[in-house]
Length: 230
Image 1 (cartoon, rainbow, N blue to C red):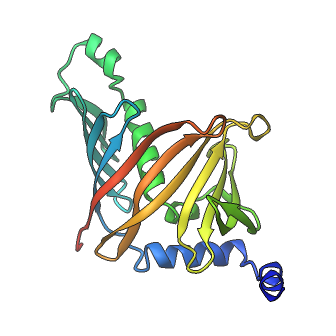
Image 2 (image 1 turned 135 degrees about the vertical axis):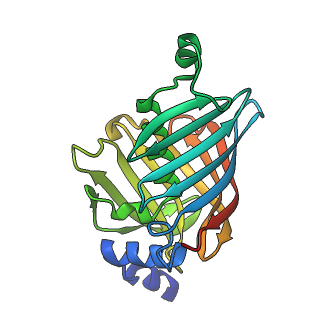
């Protein structure tokens, strides 16, 4: 009886308060947006293969570099002065190879945005154009959580996101996105474990599933975090 009353009367924080508490948990010193951060991670695919990657993210300097190893090594460089991709360490490749591995500035920027956004959550929810809706209590993977619907200004993005936070400490435990919420498309991402690096706390594993059929699409595994001292 009293437990039910407690759950029903539990105060849900405002969107700004919830986000602030979550950021204070994951990045209390504000390192992700002020210091160069190095991440090493492996992506496990459905066929059992792994893609090893190393990313250098410097949000303040607007600099991004990453190498990803599959059957070849793909490099990505984006900064205020350059935007390109490499194949096995060189830009001197044939047009056939450029087409096969999608080596373009446009692709490099897409990779930069994707990696920086996902590994930078929940801090990236402070980006301009992010629209936070009022949080509410919900269930995610069998646990009660704070849920928050997030949309974006038209010039930023069109997807609809839901983020889920542990009620005890506002740690991010998962999220989902829809291209068209009425169709139930998109994917759900379940977070587990933690990796600590110089005061920055990020999820150790990020498992991806389809909304329709709950099909596993792959898992990202963070191996290490290193934050530059300057």
